[in-house]
Length: 532
Image (cartoon, rainbow, N blue to C red; front, side):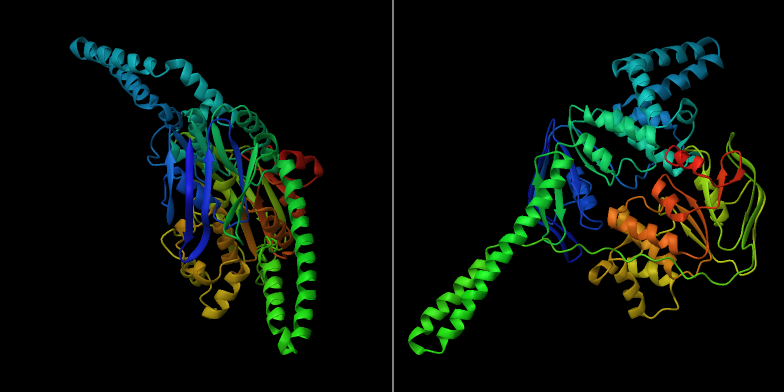
């Protein structure tokens, strides 16, 4: 159980939340909602014990499983399977069993006897922690999240960013915690995995808080909605499901508007009467009383929710370039003995629109990283045409330095702009005032997305490599980027699970990985987007 009482959250000098209380216990399935940058990620970090509130206290009883928006795994050399098993302490025993088995096979005499005894001790510990039944359960969870046995046997360092995040989600779900804190758990999941996750959470016996822009997940799983109101720095709790919450919130807003309109009408009448009476000395006291009454009428009302700001997202005006600004010949890439893709050829003409499809782990992100010059191919070459300028949006935000501030990051991307011009552009992406001094490392996923997009705006890129650009965005910001994508005049290579992003792009061609096959786009490919 997690109990938060009278907590206050701040981002620098900016107040995010004040005097808020929240309780999550068994059976509480909470959807935490609010616009990007409102403080949802900050709140979950505080509830998980990863950060401290500015005021108030948080008490935890039982175990807590926390999936951050940008999970950072430690040792990239350990196997994906061991990372998941580690949630119940099975990983060390499993490694000891494997090591002892290898020693048994490669030795004899006393050394073999010693290895057998070590194997027996590790086996007893393994069975005490759930043994092969628990290992099978972990494998089932992993497979349901798109991690087959082949992937589980690989070191984390050989996996894509999306695969590593699914390993972390599998680890949290396998842990059997009393309370789960899940920040955007559907990122990098295909449609089948999302459906499985909905069923898993709907039947979860513990409590959980989930942050998600997936309305289907919220509809299927939550029985309470907590809205973090960025304007009022308060939590509004609705003890109801998602659809009922949307209806109730609309009803509440209409009520607030009616009450305010009526009160302001009465207050206006009182003020007019008071003005007429103030002219007479004998009625000055009564007039003052009327003015105070008018102020009380308006002051006692609940505030109407101010219209929340939306990032004004636009993509860069592309610099002039030749007919084919970007090409690739014979690209291949492997991780250890694991072949990702081979012999991929590409010709990206000026203004062309290409979607890259493939199952998770097929190398979509790896291909974009090679085209962007972040990684080198094992074979083949990337060829830059006349005047090419590449803008790369990385799904894991690894191009952003967590130690640098927002304004430092943007200044490096836009050295040609004055300080006031930089702040103006950042303001259009909802970074204003003290926000620009925040370190990138403390930003939410949505804020990192907006900062990365802001750096693209000033890049004059004529070829955009976009890797899941709608992840972490609230619905209003997502619509902004889809609209910008439709207006952009340069070339785009897009990797996404978002069918709406593909429709907005209106692609001409599709590249299928790992085969590297290229085809003209048709609606027949649309149903593969969410499965890819």
